Length: 321
Image (cartoon, rainbow, N blue to C red; front, side, top):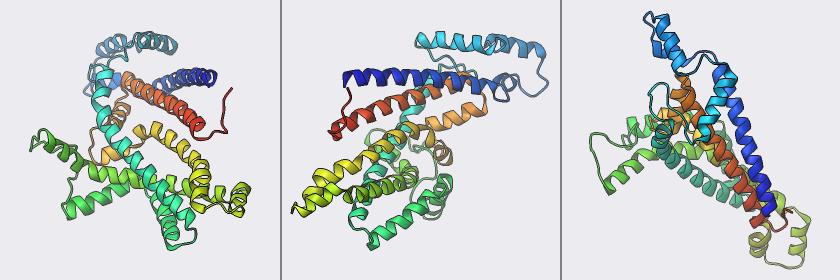
């Protein structure tokens, strides 16, 4: 297991390095640049453009820029935002909290609700619950997240006035302590429902299909023929085998969910990292974009390693030499 873990860590580091190279090249080769935005549209002087280009090292060949970025990164410095001149680490740290609150809460709810309903539907295959949940899963899976968010705002915020339309807190109220926590949860409700409903179909269908497939295996038929109780067969054999695909999807979604909630953060004006990434893209803020993509790459690598290790714990058949 230790040898396997070392290999996976090495693979993760290589993935991060490859991701850094690809992202750096794509970002710098994309049309547009931050200097044109900094210089302004009202007849900017060529001297100003040249000075800004020299200041940020954008006149160097792209491979020289990449080497400079790696040297800065190895010092533990993500650089400074071109647009705000603030440290990239500071900007990301300020936004990562709201994003993790929305993303992690939604994915935990989705995996619990989706997996539980998928398992129950598989055990009651053909029932009204199974048919209804199958239909709803396809409906929500095909529904654009931004449209669902807008509909929830229209119904529960604009019409019924139950929840706030946007933001994370009520700026006019200036709550403190426990009242502030309640205020954040109140603002979190609609975006949380939106992201959760969009994710539930994945876990429902995977859990349902995995349970049905495992229940049809020959060894399960043997246990039933031997007179073993159905609940014992399910808890000891079916569940452990069927839960593995769910863990895989959970690990992948956990890594990608930070970028995946960007549209929802824009719809609900949620002050998270998704909105920060969209702003950085629109303004061609190279250092900020690279910092965000680095965080995403590290998240993906770490989640993949953790998922593989959980596999070995849950399924005793999996052993790594």
